[in-house]
Length: 435
Ligand code: UD1
Ligand code: CA
Image 1: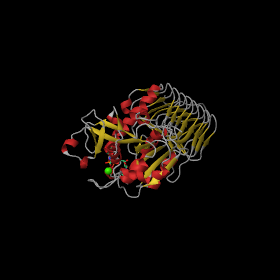
Image 2: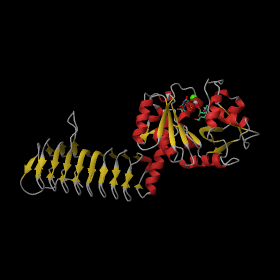
Image 3: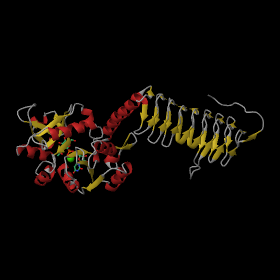
Image 4: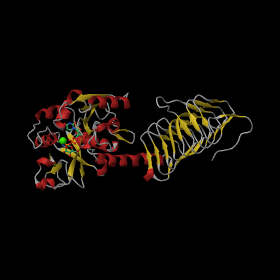
């Protein structure tokens, strides 16, 4: 058994302030649902199980999480009515197993695994006896504490935790406190089962407050340890689209930093967008104003951008180049292949050392269905060619500038086709492309 028995993720909230039909925790950040980052946080602790408390859009949330984590030990608990954080955890109590329990929020995607490990350590090692303190929680000094529960300490800022008071229940003096409750807690085995049934709804919001468990422990004489988070931005909770965009920026910066550390040259991180989970090989150069979406893969020593858009299913083999105003989707480019200017490459398999001339368009969609195109090794696609799928262009074949290769065409290896509609040309290869 790892240090943590169960991680409970609260994700049943309505998310009304998002002004969206989409369940809040399914909003995408850098190409994956917000809640997936939180499941990663949970799994980083190697718990025996993870329980997600779901409410609004339960089925959709369940399906998205199971699809993203097919192998993980994830269970779901339903909270039909949102009666507060204490009630939400109570809905999950049947799923809670032996060992310490950690509580996370499904809308807090930037917390770092190190912080969570520290919190569990504080709980397990921080108190008297083998099982440590009964509970530990995270706090942070907020620039703007509005909306958060305030941390009250006995005898001033350095004292032991006394209780947590929600903003709507707080006095003006309490509201002036800047240390706030993040909402992340570790509890010793059995504590939640014992204390949750004692919660009452007698407060300004008529909710069962999980925070009252901490307050009750303290008044029963069991100290609750508070770990202060150094970096406030790690604790951003997402309630609005503005906060979603802030969190996106934070996660994007981390993703780019990982690529930079792995030897990917990113000239201008401020204008480079790379989704979560994109593999990029060492030595690749990414030029400004480029977007690489989830489900793309880029090899070593490639060049991408400026102004490129690599969409899902893009595979750039080692040493290939995609340049200015080129969009790729379900497109593979073999070793050393170049598509440097003004192209759309959709549903196409391109061999190695191919030159895709400026302005080449692979017309993959006939209005109803998408079709595939194949381009063989060392082919030379003239500038302004339109390849209407399905087509097959053989190895070393050439299309002339402005050729329209109509649907169903098969250009044999080494053949030269020109014109509108394109037809085979007998004679020498002409050069009509850009590099
Ligand atoms: C809670 C804390 C507050 C803390 C703040 C940090 C309580 C009573 N208060 O505030 O001290 O500063 O978090 O963000 O716990 N949720 C459910 N079911 C519910 C209610 C909430 O699943 O019935 C989930 C939400 O989806 C969200 C999380 O719990 O992920 C927090 O809910 P939210 O309403 O944002 O927090 P508060 O209760 O306002
Ligand atoms: Ca609330």
